[in-house]
Length: 109
Image 1: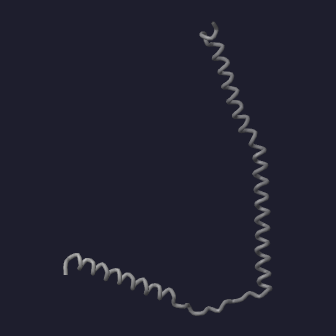
Image 2 (image 1 turned 180 degrees about the horizontal axis):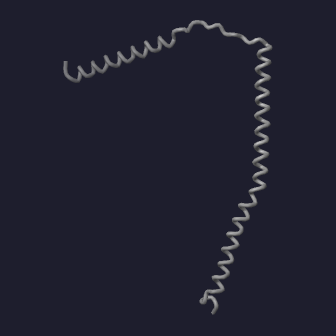
């Protein structure tokens, strides 16, 4: 047997080993778990859980509405400040440009 044949045979045997390990893992996973009795909810319990979910959803919607209302109010209150600040800087730049044109000797002639 040549070296390449030995390497190939070793490779095949290691692949078989890995395949058999994978098969064992699959078998372990597929072993059925003991049947656990599933507790079925009575209609009253289902109604109660549904009512709780509804109550939580309604509370979340109300909180969301309040947050949006607050954000809207803050936008109206503070939105004008940004506009005013930008407008002042723009007016300052225009004033400086006018002054520089008045003081520029090359433009006077």
